[in-house]
Length: 100
Image (cartoon, rainbow, N blue to C red; front, side):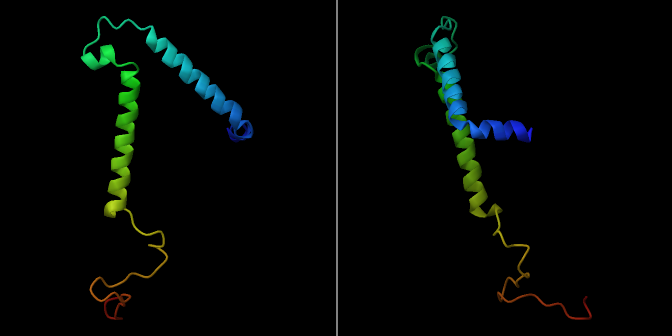
């Protein structure tokens, strides 16, 4: 698997252009799909509706997850490296010998 990744990373321009070509073929094919049995107005009249909808939904999920992560669920990178601090005083916690 590592050899495949190295092979593709050495030829990144070819990989990118191949992906663009596949995307163009999929978009061209979607223009010829029969839309007479569409379920909604948007599905029938907006070209590439489901592609746009899927991209927007994925972007919204990623944006929400990023916001949620940065809003307090993530911790600093050195969380496990530094000693624990007392929440009230901000000084490192010390344990007395009788409690240890």
